[in-house]
Length: 249
Image 1 (cartoon, rainbow, N blue to C red):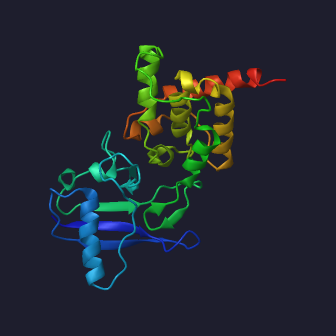
Image 2 (cartoon, helix red, strand yellow):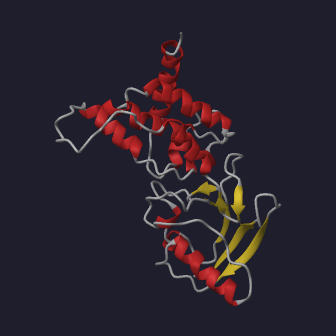
Image 3 (cartoon, helix red, strand yellow):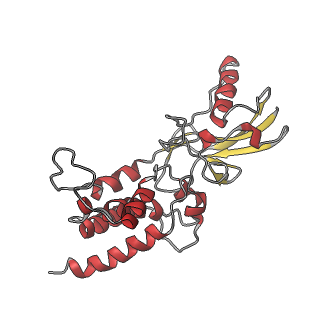
């Protein structure tokens, strides 16, 4: 398989970038997308050129590191799929692919396809914790949790923080990510004590990081590789409204 890659190349966050056209030949349809980039990078390095910089870690769709845009779609647009889970059999011989990093003020480009997603970490630091003494492991039935609450908390907890929601949103909002973290902890008894202080702290940090505001386009959920529902944003907004009354003196 032979492909034409139009890759965004940028030396650093303070440099201007541009697309570079790279011919990728001899690509196997059995390769994953990242394996294809590894193959291309080996050829670039053998020719004395700079390899394409991209972030990755687990290569199993768990860590969320590998995300970037493929033909204008986060992770390539295949439902419930991260870039590392995308295989070259999804593409055709002779196809042209445009690769570029997430585009958001809160995600500055580090180099080429790699962006700095530490803004997500700071949102978690603002309130993603519980202060109750959990002690040693308890029996699973010692703390009753409603089945609906447990299921919704688990669904929210599947967020891997890849940033596809931000890249897909026309406002570059991080509300799906923030809503998932707020919902995950807020639905469980251990997270109840900080429920309202948490939602205020995390949403304030979200805004301070330069993310945009949600206007209910729904692109975030559509491109989320874990299929997280917009319900988490609705719950977060409801808790934020309640917090305005609960936190009054």
